[in-house]
Amino acid sequence: MVKNYNDFIEVLMDAGFSMAGGGNEGIFAIINHGLNEEVVSPIQWHTEDPETDPWEWRMRVLNERDDISYSKIFFKKTGFITREWYPYFLSARRRGLTFEEAYESGKMSHFAKRIFEAVEGADTLSVPEIKRVAGFGKDDKSAFDKALTELQMGMFTTICGRKHNPNNNNWSATVFCTTEHFWGADVFAEADGISSEAAAEKIWEQVLRLNPNATDKKIQKFIFG
Image (cartoon, rainbow, N blue to C red; front, side, top):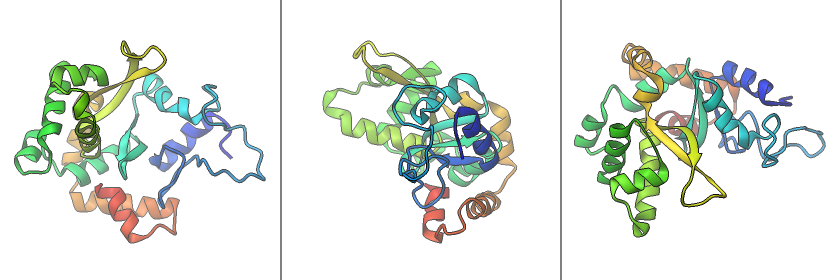
């Protein structure tokens, strides 16, 4: 049983990836919201206890480690990927494409381009800063949210922390950077050395190790987005 943050990290490093929001989506999640009520667990959501609240672990991994990413990466929902497994997902999802190449081939939207160029130009930007720099107004909320998810699913941007939100003192603002900025050149060099087919096969096998009941359809969507 995962009882605290350190247990969570140990399991995640072995698994390589996990859904983060409390549901496994038919694949795998280290922590589920629907814990067996008959099992007494110290894990409790939204208590703000950094040791036992999975909501706090999202930012702890980004603040305290350099070998785990967290973003909207699976099924347009949040998940974790370790340094060991990130090159495989990069190879399967991006297939060696730069953002410019993905955009020119029609895989990325114009809204995503505006966000990406703003983030790339500044290294890191919070959500309010992205909106300001990229010229998104209040009426663009739906397009902005969709494009931000699109970039994370495409593995072009990722969450890299949080900071004070000048627009809302009760909530911090999520900070984004490009995946290149987050991981550095070595991870991309490794991805370039793995064919997308071999990468997908490797992830597929690991999913079945973690969840033998995962369906082909779910695994396919999990890997390729």
